[in-house]
Image (cartoon, rainbow, N blue to C red):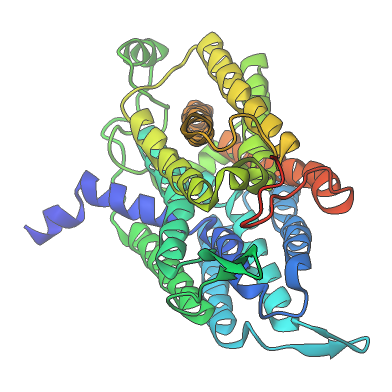
Length: 439
């Protein structure tokens, strides 16, 4: 009975989701905890700039992995790389929880060297996961790719929920000398405890990956494959691949054979279009729009901002869950979906550009519009990314590698494109707490 439970598909889905959760939870935790750490560390509110640069530098990890795959095919052992970066992340999170507030003198100025160094290590792990976790998932049938993306959505949701419980950003407006002044409330627990939460999440993810690698891999019942059977299966709405066996993962030997297969059949116009669409989607969801979320929401109040963050991040795993049952294979359908998401993205960018005095300020309609826009924007593009990942899974192991490359490249370009207008030229104006300058 125990063996049956251990080998069940439901348990595999749980393991895959928790494994995927560990991909970007480190960076997400660092971002949501910024309002707490900036009040302690000497860099202050310049810290987000440092964080953006360190995440960009973390891209050397996926670059190294991609070059290795190209120059020495079959040499890189994905399992060992994943084990290594997971252990590295767990150790870094322990040191972060202990030493995050320590400072050192550099060029006669106080700098938070431990925090910045450990941030780089965690960013390196997260970036490298884009080109290692997804290719590893090729061993499993396509439905587990969708579960993996559900886990990635949880990597953003869980830190937000814990940060809300911590009381990040809570304030009260009190009258002083005839004017309203913001008074920021103390958090319910310190940043050290939050980083211990990160350690627990990373440990759970690493244990789940270890459990996945220890589960028995069953060889396909039949090695015969015919294009006709694949055509019939796709017409019935199911996903398939010559190496896949419906519900069980394939062996490492079969994956190595797939890696050795020629790539010329992969670079079709449709696959190129899917990769470009994937890159643009990640540029918007991971780089462009998060950079201006505070500008688009805070003029309507801190509660609006928190609702947008939490419900938007909740829409991510929910959209991935929907994709487990409904897959849109039409290029036209995917294009229309991306256009619809782009409309909401444009509206949110317009709100950020008009900050601190966006339209419908002070009305319930304005609040509802901005929250709903964030939910729909995040949901549409999350669904789009899962569908593209599923379709590329059918194209083979190399397709998932390039899927990870375009995810990382899109996220990086999106973040870098917003760095000058937000941090250097200050195109977007922040609203002031407890002050109404629009009347």
